[in-house]
Image (cartoon, rainbow, N blue to C red; front, side):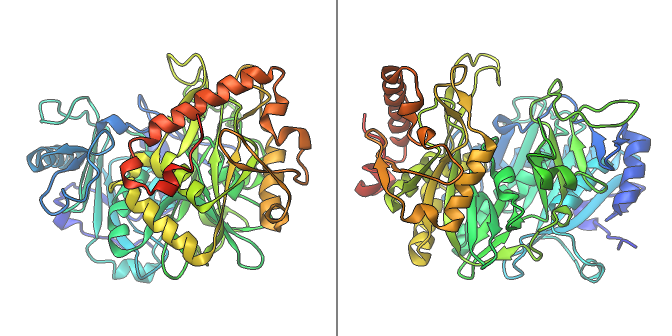
Length: 527
């Protein structure tokens, strides 16, 4: 039986407050009142409405004297006044208190008890409550009895359009985070991922201030306790590649690295579902059963079978599930110091090799660059590959300057002798539209070779432009695809494309050059 909480300090006065409800009860409420459906797999399917992804241009950080000097202000962290936050908070609370039923979910962020924070989510949709129950670390009944007041509160009034008369609110959507009040307010979007990333953004402020590196990465552990981190932007393969039947999953998206090792921030996983198959991603496929949430996944209205190949609503179809539904999950979700650091990129230009070994300086350069590429057709107006750079492979969630996170990573990697690798899950034999996507089987073979130690001593070729150290051979990977230039029908076209991409790297890195050492600046591509 769930423990009831009285969120009096959060000013919730609604007549029916449903606290820490079971998944079964949340299923009933979602089906009865929100049009959700129970699919043949057992997952609860729902739709987020107009917004089917995050709204980063609508995110604001409250400018307070205590934190203003630390925040990385700019296009990622746009300032808002304390008065604007107060008005948005008041609007959200009025809306929440006017609903027939309100949901409260209590959980933790962080598996390490020394660093975990208590989080309370207050929302108006059963599917949002189930989503955050899945994504946070679930307290035991005994822990719920003594939960007390939270360290961080999320008010989700996403069904209500934001008031554009409030200073700093520029659309019907508003996501505001006050680091001093330790509160977040969501208006005008039902996309559940905003709550998850709100938690992560807050941790990206609090953890580095304690000397802990917060990271946008997945993590798993091998049979001898060796941990690997997978950094990468959406669509590069973090969730897919960290789900490995030979290794235990620590987590698929958000972690911290302390003096003792790594810990997962979350209690669940949030996987992209587009083109999901049991054959290629058995762990994720099988986890989407009772207790999980499918967001914006099309399904057959009669059979209730999900159609993971249908992207008519959005290509960003998602499924969340408690990490316990992964057969080989490591519970508690903690591990030792990482042995290998893998940076994943989906290079739609077809320039980067399937795998390359990085020097420490190159590791810092590529961490600060955070490169991937969007393909033609994924967004309106994109007709050819478009380079995307996101510092630390997660700039949208950083609160401090990227150099702060890079310094922590460099220190930890040096201290624990971690190796760094760049793995391209994108195109080979030409750019998007000419070449073909790397086969998942080949990428998995690369990851296996890293874990087995095969690539540690194999002969290397140096790329003349990017100066990457490319293995001459890799078990399970055709030798001819390891050197990208050799896969292009027109080598001169490769040279032009590589030079263009190198220029984009250098142009992007200029914004971090002042805070980087000469060695790191020299670790980039040569144009």
